[in-house]
Length: 219
Image 1: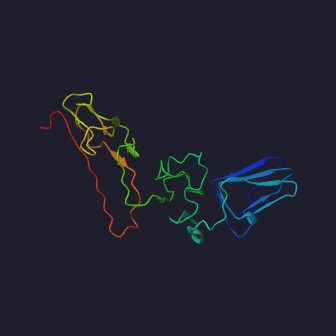
Image 2: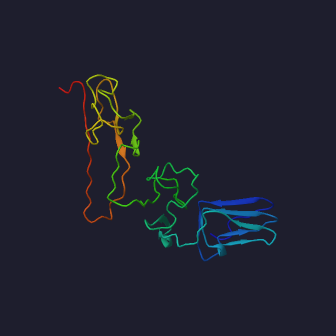
Image 3: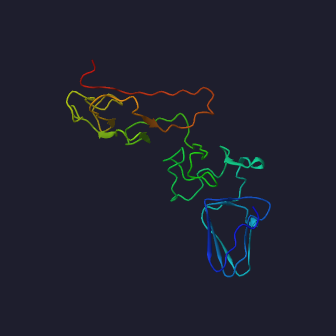
């Protein structure tokens, strides 16, 4: 875009944005206006402003190729190696991004959307156990998980259900486990989703999952 914003005696804050072209993207034709740039990928030459205005460069500003998928065809999704992934304001909401609750909001058009590109900085193999509380599990809202830390005898509210102690390592200690209790008929639509690390770049990936199911009457 060319000369997209015009201000007069006011303030402009650019945040979680990508302004990265050889042409002028933001032209400020203004009197005594302030331009505040935060947590964005910006070529400063793309911002032209009046001599009576002030350009303030704040925290989190980078000036790198955002690595769009194909800007010539106007596909402004980010490639998986883009420096704009998780580069936004740490206080910005990003609950709609696929990697929530890890990371931060992405810069650009698809920040805080389901189309946000993700990458994971944690090295694989990665073990996600229950010893430190929630490992990022989500449910469909029809039932909830309850966290139990430590164990002594039968620790679930209903007798003859659930393990007698933490089954992570088979001994009674201060580790823990999750349980959920439901009444009535089971529903096949009940869903639990686990946020996993990206293993698409691993030559021979392997996913192992251990679980324990127990109920009073199994029939």
